[in-house]
Length: 105
Length: 147
Ligand SMILES: Nc1ncnc2c1ncn2[C@@H]1O[C@H](COP(=O)(O)OP(=O)(O)O)[C@@H](O)[C@H]1O
Ligand SMILES: [Mg+2]
Image (cartoon, rainbow over all chains, first blue to last red; front, side, top):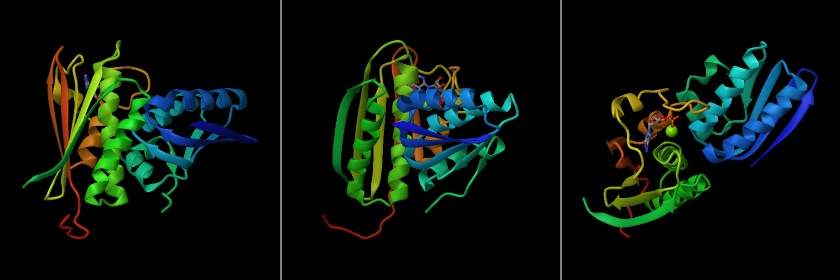
């Protein structure tokens, strides 16, 4: 598990690698929160292209980042989800708190 | 209906075992020649049930998680996940979407995932004795094998 961060002006992108479950969520959370604190983005993009599995811990992860960022009006965008991840995301009504791209095939 | 294969295993309630548990059950389910979507549904549901044992059942301790599975000649997989942890006082409330008894970043969607991704879920629980979750799913017949 790892997170790569790229910053482009007001946009911070977090490229998450590996599997997201309760075991890995804590370190992913720390990596994203550190980057958000440092760069103060107005848009945080969560890129799931290299995530091979996600359970509901991933929903908790997105909701937690939303709680932090929405306080100062920043937004979240989700991209690169596999059909498995997209299916989990859809159960949660995530589109109420973030924009999400259609999943890749 | 005949059971054609079974397995059982016991593991410590360490979070590092979440990935191990879902991968093992997925490998067992592969005998039924499931689609990728079916395999992912099973993996996700098992991940939720096992995580609940680790996070909730054995909150302050490391205990044992008992996982067993069987497949039938009617292409059904049944997976049982059992703990001897704290138990659930009110199962109906616990299963409500977005209900979580702990703060932090739990989404309260574990049971919802299990319900939506499997054909059926049965939960038995006794406070201070533990919880058993039984998940079943019928795998679509892509071809008939006589193995
Ligand atoms: N094996 C278990 N032992 C004790 N309590 C459990 C167990 N599984 C679930 N629960 C209870 O049911 C609630 C809902 O579980 P779930 O839907 O997976 O959401 P979450 O894990 O995000 O809290 C938990 O918050 C917990 O109170
Ligand atoms: Mg859970």
